[in-house]
Length: 417
Image 1 (tube, one colour):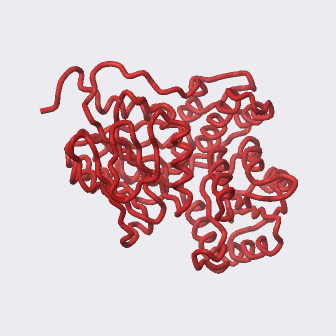
Image 2: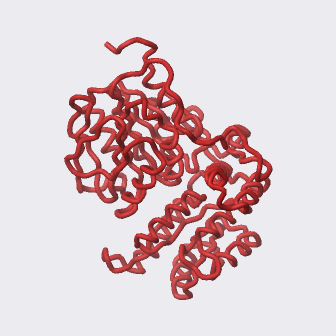
Image 3: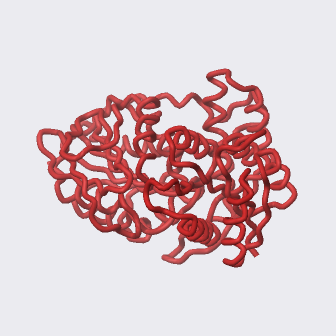
């Protein structure tokens, strides 16, 4: 039976979530704060944790970091839908949480019954997903520890990373072979790619300062990159933007499955990390070279036209596709239909099949297509579905996504006819 640890300082909220998950057939344990959560996670060894963000004694964000260092686990954040709650939730995702839900606050008509249903549905998805815990834990710990080390903020982070290197284990991932899927542990490639080292002062290849790569050779003019991601995606997208070179002059569109309110803060974080001018997309705006537009929560992002090296985008609040809005397929398909400039579609970690049809469209339009590989995808659903279409040109680990994107526009001194 799948074990779930419910962490919340509110007895009422613990009871609501506990009852919903117990009725759904899960084995549930509870904890009242972050410190208790760490101890319980070590003893109970849960498959999934639901974690409140704001708690006394030790908050959810610090608890996430310590649990991921000692007992790498799928952690679902439950946050209040406020500015501070949004920022803290994004910090938790950076430190290793896999996904999040926001608690009802009366602003959108959601009730506790809705939250209960959403928690059960999300836990069902995580329990049934093929997840590489090694990739999840080590990618998050390594990326966060590198930033912390550069800023000299916290010596304890180094100890946590050392613990992640020693204690991470695999809970299984997905292998694609001849169109079928089989469970297998994440292999040594994942361990080499994401191992954060053996101590606070050690540094592996993946721990080098994530500065933008240097552009070499000749590349296509006015390229367009369309990125799609879902569960586990924010930290992968952040790492990608840190290294994407401004000299490439790309126009970048990002569809990250997130609710309304979170995408604006996500865009602000990417803008701080990147050489690109990143913002949440607005209806009718132009996206130029060196700029990136993030699909807003609760609206599809479409490309209206591609003229003079610029994209004009529009927002659509039409029906959900694959149960989500924004949908990766909508953005990729509209980009493929209007594409004049060279285009590259990239699908990253996440559950479901959103993005598969979009990848097919970009391939048919003559664009280049890339999927994140299994070993470094926290959840391999979206990349796997795209790969199975037969329309993916390159399968790349998270650490090589930027190089693969840049190579997609390499002309070797030639111009496309």
